[in-house]
Length: 359
Image (tube, rainbow, N blue to C red):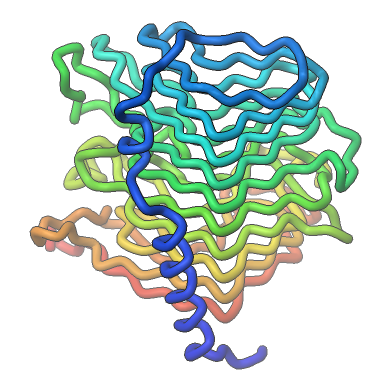
């Protein structure tokens, strides 16, 4: 095993924070404030679109895209309590750049905010330099890839900023139910995206604040894979915080959230499970349960990541589950050899505090 150069590692960590800070001069709420909004739109023709669109009804998507022609959304402000951008089945190349997506409370008892970007059965998805503020269930969800498995039809999620992924359920009175779990939510999730070269998830910032968010796994790779010649690259992401609706009651919720994990169902076909990933040079800090995990998959390498959590909020409140840990490697679904295996975990730095006997 090669030796880690922790001096270079620290310098890289500081560079990540400097680049993220320099690229964001204001919060996403600021970029949406003062704008004049039009109503929801449905896009049925390819082209480049710029605008400010809003829905006040959680059942109405703000932007719905239904076309096989390439669509680019750039320099736009999109706001609402439901899904903000939905890309319909069999759509073509979709690019979303330099845009602001803001989730608002539905203020309906028992209902949570919608997804920021849901790309369903698409052939190519590229999201870059977008701000996602208080978005709900999923921040960016790319599921059921229908492309030709070429580099021209791939997925890149680069240099995006997430502030408070918030899947808490509304109490209908302007607040949220701290007694209901919000952990089935993610900032980024790929699901059933199999055998796609050139996938890159990098230079994203995900910051969740206690009592202002509710998130499960911040980055979840669910039954999705790169290729042996072109493994999926997940690198240089900064993930801070991650709790359920009540950060001090993780055990009560059986909170299983993490900064990053590989995930999926029981599989017998290695082509349908998570595989061919390289997860490296990411930073996970201040989380409530788990830092980073390989929970299933094959040909997955996790290296040179920094994983640190004190297990406490700023006021000293214990916010870690009693089973919290920094780094995990486990065949969670008991998948057979070939579906799980040929993985490596090396040269990571991990330090995590958790509760013991109530302390």
